[in-house]
Length: 254
Image (cartoon, rainbow, N blue to C red; front, side, top):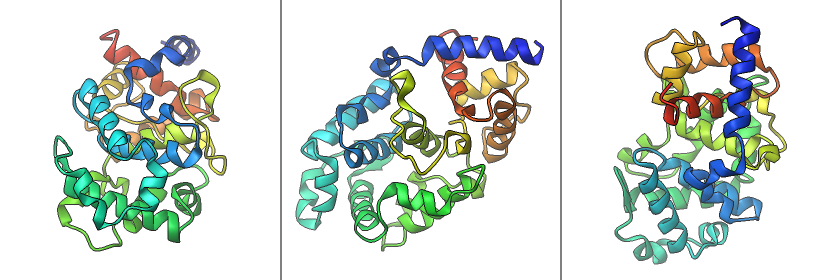
């Protein structure tokens, strides 16, 4: 396809999938339970952290986690201490377990109490055209408290050549405007033009078939290559095409 034809094709798929019905089968439905900014971003971050594997299992376990937190994630984080640790006993999603979760809550409390919250951390380290270095800096801060080494694997680092799919997805949720009724757009200090596509098996395979991506591995270099291609289609909101690429792969078996 010519560039104009490709853009028209993908724009049509964005319109098809970028609508409220998308929420009913996507993990983003968990932060959509909340209206307060801090609740949305904490629920979103924790949900994105466990967003791999079976989608039904992701949603079920994220909902269970919100229940354990009294469906008040910000309040729970701010008041979390070791005295609450027993409330998390038995939580597990694949390799993310109660020990990892306890550290995540302690680190989130530290970020909100000492560093102005999640948005502020990413804002301070954002590049003019990318948030990938900010993800690296966020991970450094997130694991600045004493922790088990195994827990670090649950936050990816693009500067170590990870595609960082889950945290890029979380950033899409927070930054993209809510015009389609899916994302939240509650982080006004950042812009959609800085976002990177949450690259996974579905979006990667479709991008290759459409000649948007040539690199075979789904890694940070592939994310950068796809970023360049999508910015040529829409420099102000390139990651809207995540809906098209994912939908084509996951639902249309393109």
